Amino acid sequence: MPIKQQLDGGAVPVKIYTDEVEASALEQLRNIAKLPFIHSHVAAMPDVHMGIGATIGSVIPTRGAIIPAAVGVDIGCGMNALRLSLTADRLPDNLTKVRGAIERAVPVGFEMHKHDPVKRSTITALDVGLAPIIERHPAVRRMQEKRGFVTWVRQLGSLGGGNHFIELCIDEADAVWVMLHSGSRGVGNQIGRYFIELAKRDMEGQLGSLPHRDLAYFREGNPHFDDYVAAVEWAQEYAMVNRREMMRLILEALASRLPPFEVTREAINCHHNYVAREHHFGADLYVTRKGAIRAGEGELGIIPGSMGARSYIVRGLGNAESFCSCSHGAGRRMSRTQAKKQFTARDLEAQTAGVECRKDKGVVDEIPGAYKDIDQVMADQADLVEVVHRLKQVVCVKG
Image 1: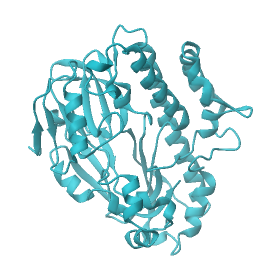
Image 2: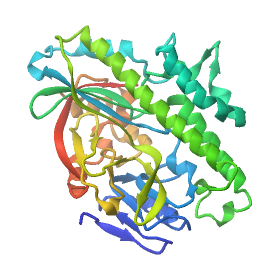
Image 3: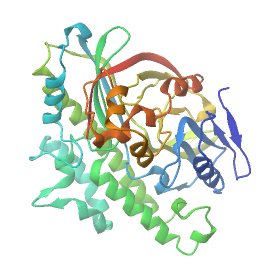
Image 4: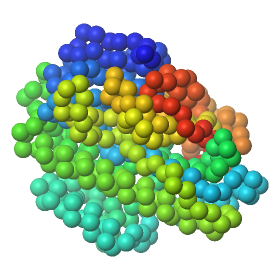
């Protein structure tokens, strides 16, 4: 078994798939394991590291309760990848214009589309699901109306900032892939923050009994439990649509700069910050994957490296001890603040050699050196997934 260490002393153990875990992340994992509704154990993936509220790279199975801060604020964040009929030898020698075409088609950072970017039927379908949530929780509306348009509509098909990215990659057979990483944008953030604070208010008299106040939770039967589940499921659907619409815009942009191509049948669109109803170890559970993807037997997933490292398309092995899960990426080994102090734009340029991407100080916190070694992360989860394709990026777009 690839389990490298186990933490005991809580209500359940924590099973960890790596030796590389900082003390602060271990403390977060211990706190989660103390909660009375955790079922069987907590699983920590090889990319595990400290997060806000709960540890990134953790799989948290709960009976009759959900911890909003464990789900986080980028609800439904995940990956989308498509393989094209193009091969590497058909790409232009200089990919600067290709990156520029993608950046013009897809807003990045805090930017959004100047006009509603998707079909009215798509907007209407999402609006129908959001309306009852806003009716019961009007504070969620705050980020929706802005200068006469609806913010969440204009942000559909946009990337965001931080570690979100769009990449053009080459696999081991020289096939070209398009890969992207994004989530539920501002509306998901608003929903997440609102319900995290609501859980704390609901538990105000009991917060002192929790291992950490960020672990405030909703129990089934709580008036807000069903509201939170509905809001999370809506945000997860929004994130899926956002990635789908972004991919559509990227393919249209690429069609103007690359030789004619088709999209192959190999396509993946998966969450790695989400909660789902699943059955494990004899119980029906809510499984929160915070920085982890589902890796059920035969299921395809995406495990990206950093800007200058390789990424992997994987097939799940259905490992029960991991709750059929695996890592969502390489995982940070240092904070963004520490990375900015330790590395320079020149370091970034050296570590992303051969990749058409931003190489300025504005994205130094995303430098490969700030992340764990993706090859070691993959070795640590050999019992969780098998590698289907190895990808190396040649273009990377970041906010």
